[in-house]
Length: 150
Image (cartoon, rainbow, N blue to C red):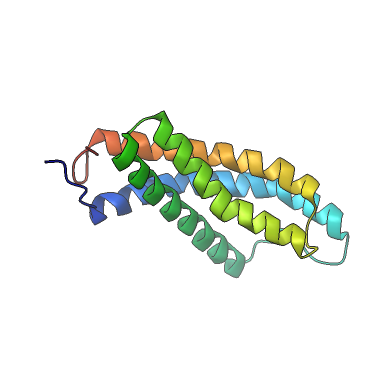
């Protein structure tokens, strides 16, 4: 009989390892793509992209939440469809839409951003999530920290 036991230790370790990629990719995307476009949008009205300890902690929290959501949704889809590209694609797409997609829709809707920025940032973020889900897939396939996904 196939079980769907959630292994917390395995999940935490895989999430922490996957979050290394998410942190690097998020910072790169923000600094190279988003911040320059946001600075151009606001001009000199606000400071954009300044990294203080408080900002760094918030970015770390954001990236950790993103990693948790991605790895958990990957785990769910892998349990349903198997540890394959379909699960990678679904988990990356859902995570991107449910986190970054909603963020950018809200940002544009409140007048704090432009659709042109969202249309550039979101595909890059989706690729970031695809790679993150692929990392989680490979880590689950190795079977360390509590066994392979069945």
